[in-house]
Length: 312
Figure 1: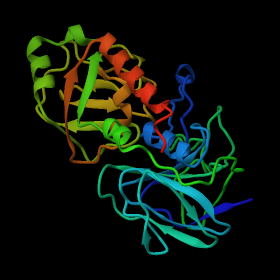
Figure 2: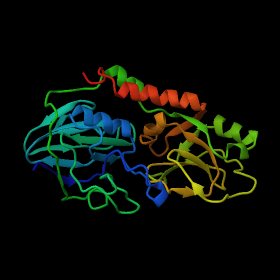
Figure 3: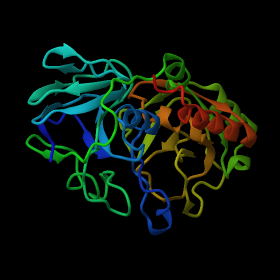
Figure 4: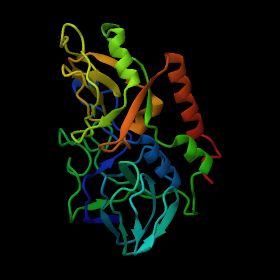
């Protein structure tokens, strides 16, 4: 069986697939790739089903050796990758020879780069997914981020070995956004007009404390709700909670499944992958859209991802 040898793990590199949605009622958040679009495209490039696992690198990439070679693709943020000293472009399949070394560095754009390999990363599933859930120590490779010396098994590759790339027009349309579109949250009516004006009219900065559980935002505070914290209830991926300090937190892929803060808005599904590319100190804004627009945006995105013209 082919393997990947981890010579340097990078800042935070984990095994991720499309996650394990549907287990919120038992307290398990979905985890999965922070930028699902990038992972899905990477799998397509190497001939995998979109659901197979790859490696998610955060801010600073790692160094990997392929003893028997492989077909790989790098997607998402630009981590200045090199294969035995030769630059490796994003969004294209690349054949790696036996014992060649892939080195990735610090990000030049975005927060996360994905390494997909023909055959996928072969790990034991937990609740139907091999995604690493860091907070609980479940899934992935021993339930944790990768370490120097780890050896990852590669599954059987069945896809074509011919070089593939993503159409430039598709990449332009799918690039991450800094203006996040949101629908009204379940407690939207609890916020006065003055608070909504601040929320939609302000620029927020991603705080250093942000992680896969949630993105804390810094900016102009405003009163949350008159009664303070509410009774705990279920929360969704992309929910924008307002803390008692009057600042937003966007719940992300390893979110808690219940919460007691009022939710002013929810990031639309089509923009969730953009959250995965936000770095500390990046600045964002919120744009309100209605439910029909949110559905139309997701349909447009999925139609593009399913298009026969996506891969060239």
